[in-house]
Image 1: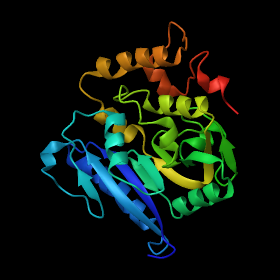
Image 2: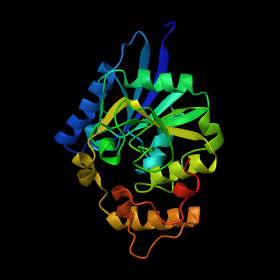
Image 3: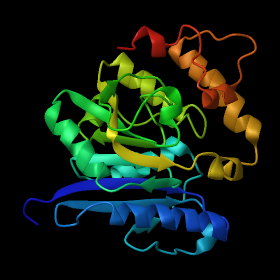
Image 4: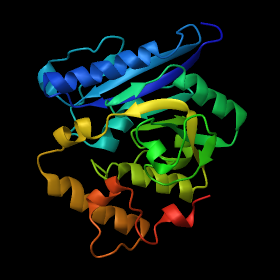
Length: 257
């Protein structure tokens, strides 16, 4: 269709019960209803971890059931490799997309040609941190501030520079690693306060944590520390990533602009 911008939407889901499946459906429905399809076409790809759904296809999507063991970045990489549009958005399933969120995102990319990656604002989370809706564009690399790991919108060409997402991060620290990678390569990322996508957050995270918590937390924390050569305090714990505590001497502050 002439004049239509296509956006590949890669959504990770672990709908092991009806409640979580409903959350994924609500996410997809809000996405489909958020834009005029004659102007923006969403190519929605769901990576579903719950194999017992027996190849169930969410409406308006292509739903894949990867044979690989779950890994947050591993599944995102599968989604990236299965899509091809100029713009790609990497998402959790616990999101509610507001009207015109993608239009506002595209406006930012068309205005700032050096913008490589962006996150939409969450009307529940970001105002508590001092970011108001429709208050401008905020460049930076702080996790859960400018970088909202639950929704990352980027130009596909950026992946030629960054390479594949690091699959050593299977659950924790994936968003922190993304932020550090963008900062280290001086690829501009911003929070777009006119683009609104709400994150349900703890409504799903507490119920989707893999059984072997230590394996999915401590090991990835130590790998993150080694990879980025950042020292953290002795009382720091991987869960602090969810409390907006930035590790001492990390690239978040070294490269923040």
